[in-house]
Amino acid sequence: MSSTSNINSLQRYFAARFREELLPKKTGHRPGPSVTISRETGAGGVSIGQKLAKYLEKNDRDRESVWGLFDRNLVDEVIQDYRLPEKMAKYIEEHSANAVEAYIGELLDLHPSISTLVEKMNETIRKLAKTGNAVLVGRGGNIITFPLKNTYHIRLTCPLEQRVKRIQSANTLDYKEATEYVRKKDRERAEYVRKNFDKNIADPLLYHLTLNTGLHSEDEAVRIIGEAVLQHAQSLAK
Image 1 (cartoon, helix red, strand yellow):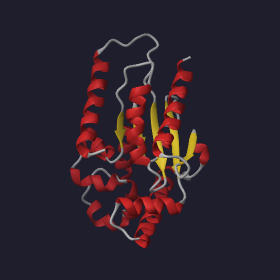
Image 2 (cartoon, rainbow, N blue to C red; image 1 turned 180 degrees about the horizontal axis):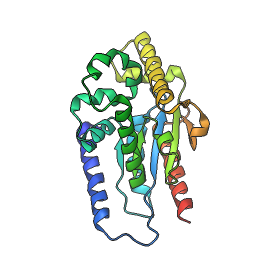
Image 3 (cartoon, rainbow, N blue to C red; image 1 turned 90 degrees about the vertical axis):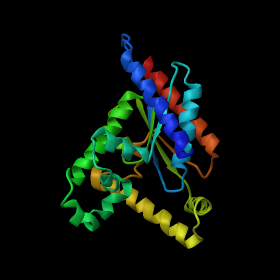
């Protein structure tokens, strides 16, 4: 999805949420479902998330739903929510956990602290998940929202060789560079979850469903996940 189309999609999402806020709440009103996606690098997290949002919009039989995908734009959402300087964006990326020491001199001039920035990110993720109809990629979203019954948690895995080839095809990298990139990003994401939540990102008990995208096409993966999410939402409505 291009940045322009993603912006348009999010504008539709927030417009729909705004309209809902203006309407009187129905008795027994429940928020729509939300989805968190944790992924190995190159397992297709963002592209599957994009297609999943469209699939859920099309196939949710119980409501006229508009879905939003939140990946890199989660950082932008935090910056806007808390009126933070844009230069703080790099401190709340998934890869920042290992880089804090490198920024320590600059951090002395920053307020709020790194821990406060992470908590603001966490609170934004909780808010979006509670609102419903949000696909949230990365940043420990499954752990942050685990107590929320309306949220379904996915872990995407794939054999290393296939993930490296995908990264090669999407970037101008040779095989060695792509392998190093994949391993580095996996370490950084695991460290982010370990440092901020004291959890193992690969623990299967943190997810409703773990899917090997090396054995399924993206469209198959989207259908499997989408139907699981819709069935989960229907079971909660009973």
